[in-house]
Amino acid sequence: MARSFCIDLSQLEQAQLLVIARRSIESGLRGGNALRLDIESLSDSLAPQMAAFVTLTKSRALRGCIGSLEASEPLAQAVASAAFNAAFHDSRFAPLDATEIDTTLIEISLLSEPEPIDATDRKDLLAKLNPQEDGLLLEDARYRSTFLPKMWEKINDPEDFLNHLLAKAGLPGDYWSESICFKRYQALSFGE
Image (tube, rainbow, N blue to C red):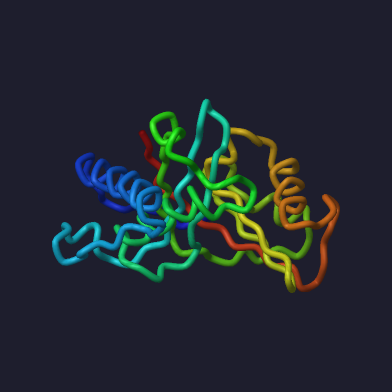
């Protein structure tokens, strides 16, 4: 069973993070750099190191999604960096341009620390997944991919979820190896 993930962010702090994300994208449009923050001026809840992803959508279609699975920056700066990278460095899309900023929506996902799933085979892994709750990270040699828990809204069958995750990593849907490993994590997601 996955550990519960709880982060106590007020509505105001969530709104602050959304403003930071948008300001970082605007900074990128103006000067080509992510917003750099004075962390000491933020509330204590926005200063601890935490992993974060930023997802951009336009007309309900994905427009960019980048983040980090490891906490390496203070939360507010992690959001600013992820927003900038989702807008300008997601290799699946052309960089966001100024004409798109007003019609692009931002969603932020704050991640718990990934924990290993001890699975002996595909069936065992599927039995241990918590649909609608678990984000899933796949790693095997040079292959790596992840789906945020939000992906369960689009792919609600665990077997399909795993198949798509394998495909995202560049592996066949029925792939399994002795060296493959999976980690789960939870997320707090909020958006505009």
